[in-house]
Length: 409
Image 1 (spheres, helix red, strand yellow):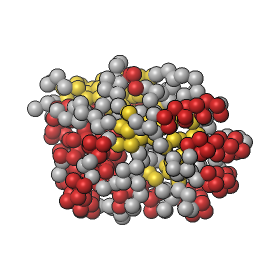
Image 2 (tube, rainbow, N blue to C red):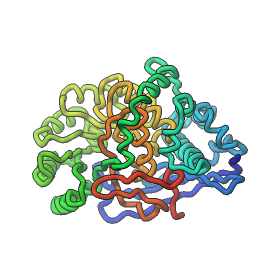
Image 3 (tube, rainbow, N blue to C red):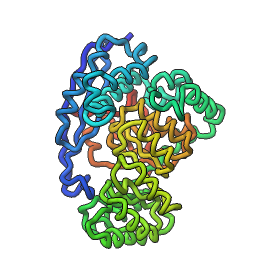
Image 4 (cartoon, rainbow, N blue to C red):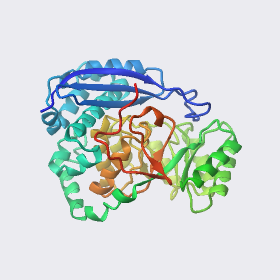
């Protein structure tokens, strides 16, 4: 038995090289993690992370300490057997809930806490997180989730049926455990990189085996975006997948015009075109630019808003991130919703792909999600004890116990 005896935090902030991480909205980022560290009586420890861009990281750490108190004294197996209830209890803490609900500092704190619980659980069982999740039966998976406010589209029985329906065909998808999971490279196209730098970084990524690349757009002069997008298409060729990411920069009228102008270079998707809470604007845009598809989710903070986007037919790809929603638990919930609506999940990787390399394996094998690719951002790999291994444009399957979240801090 392993009992949680204490909770501490770390305010971990990492400097980036010039230009790295910059998009049309977020200037001068400092990739930072509000880290939850769970201590136990068995010598095991759990590490959870939630992403910020520097300022406010300390606020999330303070919220972690306040919200994690119900975990102290809990035995990890008993905790995870009904984790959905614990998740809801923390998310709906009567006073701190007022600061959200289910968004902002308090929900980022819940993400870090939740991720630490899953990391600890996998370490106690001596297996990587992906294996632990795949070993669970449908009842155990659904017991990890809070399905409240989803009852109009997804109740417990629906989630159980969906999981069970894919059980007989799992073996057909387990080849991914031998081949690894394809990646796409975001680091080639940061917003402030000059044209020649984008060109050279993209050339290197293609030589390394990546066949999918992302370019940041959202310039004050849209002709810059159009020129750079066509430059990247010419370099990569017609068979490569090129994603364009506006990081919420456009109004709906701007997005309607610019997306149609960008369509001629055949983007795989256009990401975060406008305000992340504006479901109807995304619905309007998605209908206007079809069959070109929108991707969203990096700044969608909770499962209910994801439900609304899916109900509205406003998303062609769901980019849920376990360091931005309420951790691994809510990530799985959103993945179930997306599967129900037949929309692929391609996570945003605030964790730099560390945890999501586990979760996409679960999504593909257990839920039958299409194996597309997983975002790759290499900027913090030297800070992780077990950094994701990406070679030939493919994520290797992690083998160490846990969620690959331990940092050198």
